[in-house]
Image 1 (tube, rainbow, N blue to C red):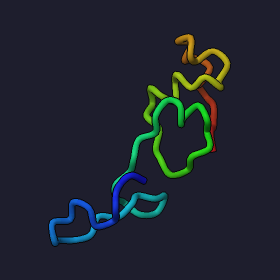
Image 2 (spheres, one colour; image 1 turned 60 degrees about the horizontal axis):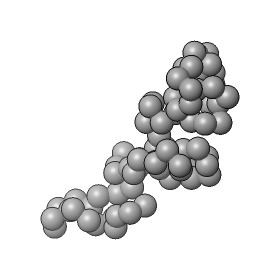
Image 3 (tube, rainbow, N blue to C red; image 1 turned 90 degrees about the vertical axis):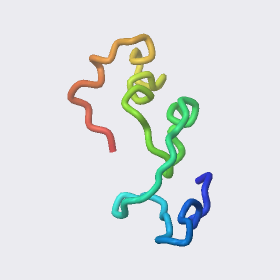
Length: 72
């Protein structure tokens, strides 16, 4: 990620990277990173997921294909 663990701590509590089990700072994925699907450290916004080019149509604005889908 693009920050050091102690960045922004100002001498107080250390800022930690967020994970599935720890609250902390997270970095947003770009659309290119979302489309590549190979980064497990950044998070994706709903808009970037909806425009993900690998969902066969969502990039064209057809978000209905996302309904009822389970992503892991």
